[in-house]
Each structure stands twice: as structure tokens, then as C-alpha cells.
Image 1 (cartoon, rainbow, N blue to C red):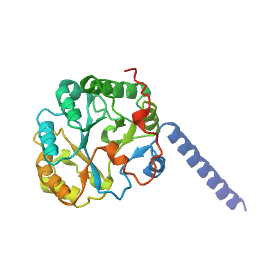
Image 2 (image 1 turned 180 degrees about the vertical axis):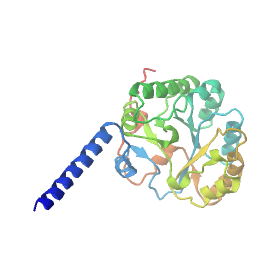
Image 3 (image 1 turned 45 degrees about the horizontal axis):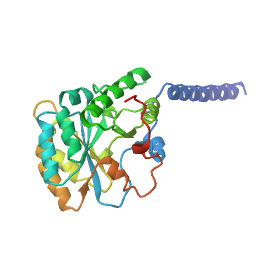
Image 4 (image 1 turned 90 degrees about the horizontal axis):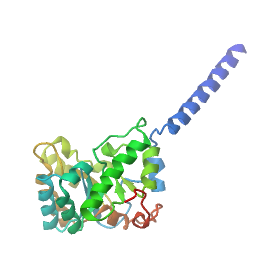
Length: 262
């Protein structure tokens, strides 16, 4: 009997330890999964829609060499895109942000210095990175961004809550549309990744700043005409969200007041 009491007590203590650990992890900002955030509309990976629309997104720019080529290709194929810019690069290349805006593309916040956030980062550091990036976007375009993409796609409860409090919708990307173009896997692999998995509502991840030579622009020369040939339209992320077949839980952030002091 003592043996079974000992086993039972061990199980109770183990369960309690797991419960406490889980509570502490959540309190410390440990990331919860997609199944938690997506139904609430707090993070968008892709948009459920039957319309033939997709969103091309470009991270880490603007780049004085690569971004202009991408902008020209987008214009050639009547495609719109969303650029998640790095603030310090935006400061160096404000004219490129102005051109993005003038051509009807969308600009999102990707922090000022591409800082990776984790549970140890302070709320003040997050606020500083996002606010400085927002200032660079506003100074170049006269417009506030409403979309935020955390570097590396890292998120936790604190990041999501802080982003929403500042008036941003957190945007990631379709898991099957991570081209990994930054790693230069080969033009054909980038092309096949996008076209081989293409479906309505996709958010496609690419980069308009890649160290050294970029394979992205070469891949786009095949991707863009083929997307068009298949009857899809490339739209901004905000436009894509309007095609959602069920109501978006999060309030339209274009109408939400910003708390950056700008």
C-alpha cells in the first residue's frame, strides 16, 4: 500500500511541477503556438480565401541595388508587394521608401536594427527598436505603418501584446512559402518553392536585401509572369486581408490610434 501511495504522490508532484513550469513560462513570455494566436487574429500567417490573390513580402531592405530592380519587376507585371523595412536602412535610403509608397506598395516595420527578440529582452528595448523604425518610415513617406514583422519570425506574448498596443498587426508568412532566398539556395529552388506550393491567400517570404549577390531578382523574373499566367494577383498584405472569407477578429488597424508620439 505504501508503494502505491508513493507512486501516487510522485505523480501529483510531477503534475504540479509541470503546471508551475508552464505558468512560469507563460509569465516569462514563452511563445505560444499558432493554434493559439491565429484563431484570435493576433498573428497572420496566411489568409483563408477562395479569391486568387497572394501577397509577396520582402524583408530587410531597402537595398540601393536590389530594391530598385525588384520595384521595376513588380511594376512590369502589375504586382503590388509589402516591404518590411529595417529602420537604419530606411534612414540611408529614404527615396526608395518614397518610391515604394508612390507605386502603391505597402511598407511594414521590421525594427530599426533587425534585432532578434527573446524573453530576456526588455519591453523598453522592443519599444525603442520599433519606434525608431517607425520614425524612419514616417519621415520618408509621411505615413505610419500598420504591419509589424519580428525579425526571424520570433514572437511571444509580450511582443504580440506590445505590437497591438502600438497599433500594429503582426504578420508572419505561410510556412510553405519560406523561400530562404537569403541563403542563396539556387534560383530554381526559389522558383519551385513559390510556384510549386502556390495557393490562394499565401503570404510569400522573400528578401530585397541579401548579402552579396542576390538570387531573388532572377527568381522573380520567372515567378511573376507565371503567377500572372495562373490567374493570381499579387496584392499588399492589407489588401489580402480584405479578401478573408470570415471576419477578421482584429479591428482595422488603419483606424487605430498610434502610441509612438509621432
